[in-house]
Amino acid sequence: MVEKTFLWSMHYFRAFAIINIVIVHLWRIPIETNEEIGIQEIIREVLFHNSTIYFIFISGFLFIYLKNKFQLDKFYINKLRFIISPYLFNIITFWIIFYYLDLLGLYSYQSIKTNLVSSIFNGSVTPHLWYIPFITLIFLTTPIFIFKPQILNNKFLPVLFLLPLLGTRTGTEITIGQYIYFYPIYILGIFVAMNFKIVLIRLNKYKALLFSIVVISSIILFITYIIYQNGEISQIQNSLYYIQKLAIIGIILPSLEKITTNSYKILDQIASMSFAIYFIHYTLGRLQQPFLFKYLNNYIPPEFWGAMTFLFPFLIIIECIIIIKAIKKILGFKSKYIIGY
Image (tube, rainbow, N blue to C red):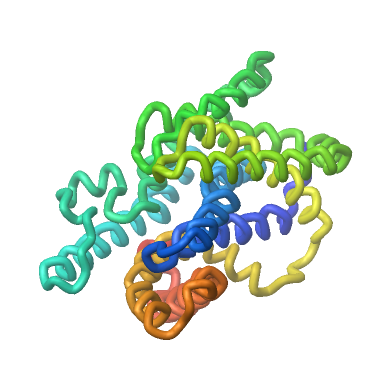
């Protein structure tokens, strides 16, 4: 059993995860006009797509790492208060915003064409909110690993970790294939937490191999995007993303484990606010991107668009932190019901 001290490594890894997610959602450029800009889009997808894997892994890890504090009623009540409540507030607010912007002809957004009730159940208002109704079902089943821990000692458990190699992720649609792809990653997080010290030793031993896996899988992904430019993520690519992201986790966790104090204040803030940043970053970014694109089209040569727009997600993160702090200042503890922080 690992000591239940505060894990700065996992805390900073949460910051790393949300930064990756913001980048993949918001590192966009105006309509592609040449091959170079197409390459920039591919680089974004290869390096940052499927960063949801990090969040799923962290959720599983922290659930079992903090199991000594587990109380069934408190677990579900907290999920209802601090996940479902802010989710409902944000998805309804975003739906209303985009609905009226579309009605006024100021901003066309296809997702508001679906009714609000349907949007709530599938998280379809914005491409990132699908994760909340998806993870809710996982949270509903999670306590079984507390009350039936022998499940995690099953000799066939490693077979479960092979299922994501089938590449059954279905974009942002909540399907059985989605659970086949992501649920094993959640359980893998649980498994790593249960054997954390041993896993760290093994990861340090094979760091060179893990680095090679990241490089090779990324190169293959890059090639697949060059060959197949239809904009759809294939099952093979999803399999490669699973391999790539697990190898990245294997490299980063041992490196972050050396941090035992709050050495990086900005990462601490991002990590602490990661859930709130997750809720608001996409809408905040999408509402500002038309102004950024207009500026780029009018004043900046296309060859500089990639580098300049890479800074945009970080600007949005800063804006998110300012907004979150303001909401926290005004509402105090009640802000958790609105933004999850």
